[in-house]
Length: 451
Image 1 (cartoon, helix red, strand yellow):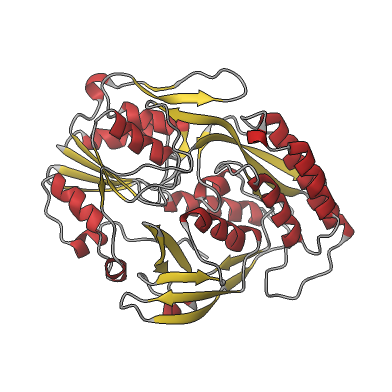
Image 2 (image 1 turned 135 degrees about the horizontal axis):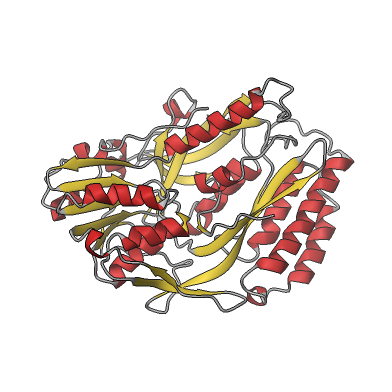
C-alpha cells in the first residue's frame, strides 16, 4: 500500500516521515551499549522479509530503472548473504538501510519499526558552513550540563562530521541504533577542547499496542495525543512588526486554505520574511500553493523526470490575491526539499532575496510505502522511495548541491552560545526593520517535544 500524496521530504527523523507512518510497537531492537538479546528466528525472518520488500519496492517504483548503473539484483544477492550473519535486530535494520543507501538518494530510505522505548540523546547539531556545532541542549537531560550551543563538534562517537555524513549519523544513532551514550570531542567558542560522554534519557514504552478497544481505548487515545503533539510542534508561527511580517514555517505540512489565510495576513504588510530554516519540506501541494501566493501569474517550478513521462510542476498564480510586497527567505543547512525548491524558484524568478547558509541538497519527489508483517501481532515499517528527480528552470537539480543564498550570513560559535541571530537581523534590515541580534534570536523560541 502507499500514500497517494506526493512529498518532498528530508530523511528521518524529520517530522514528515513519522507523522505519515505512526508505527505500532511490536519489535524490540536492542540499544547499543545494552546487553544484546539473542536474535530469535522469527525476528530474523522478519528482518530478512524487510530486505526482500526493500528490493522489490525499489525495483518496482524507483524513478531510475537503471539504478544509476548499480547492479540492483547483484546487490540484493550480496545483502541476502549478509543477512545470514546478523546477530541483532539493530544489525538487521542497519543492513536494510545500507542496502538502499547504495543509491545515494536523499529520498530513498528505510523506515524501521518503532521500538518500545524512546531514546533522547539530549542535544541537536547543525552544520554551519562546513563545520558541525551543537545547536541546542535539552533541559533536564545529561546533555544540559555537558554540551552547550556554540560548541564545535570535532568528533561524534570518534567520527568526523561533514555535510555528507551529518544526516547519516543522525539516522544511524537516533533511528536505526539509538545509543545509551554519545562520545563527543568538542571545542568551545573560546577554542578550548574537551571530551564529553553524554548519557541518553530512555523512556520505556509498551512493547505492544492494542487497538482492539480491549484496554478501553487507551492506546488509541495515546496515539492521538502523540499526533496532536506533533501537530503542535509543526504549527506555523508569525510576528507582525509594523510593515513587516516574519513567518516561521517549520514544514510544508499545511493545506491550501491554511496557506491562503497566512498570506492574507502577509498582504497587510509591505514586506514578508519567510524563515525556512530547519524546514525539512513536506507536501508538493503546499509548495505549489506557497509559490502561487507570491506570483500573480502561473510559474513553472521545474520538470520531473522518472520512469515515464511526467508533467512539469506548475504553481498557479493567485492574481490580485498574490502577495506583491518585498520577500526575503531565510535558509540554512537543515532547509530541505520543498523548502529548497521554494527558495530556488524565488531566486530564478528574481522575486526576492535568499539569506543564510547553503541548504541541504536533499531534493527529490517521493512516496511513502507502508508495509506490515504478521496478523495478530503486526509489525509496521516502511520505505520512502524516490518517484522523480526534480530539474529546476535553469536545467539543474538541487540534489547534493543545495541552494546557495544571495547573501551568506552565518552565525558564529559565539552567536549560537548567546542566542543571537545575525541572518534574521540582516533580513530585518533589508525590510527596513531594526532588530538587535539577541532580540532576533528570541522571536521564535524552540520548543522541545514531550518525552
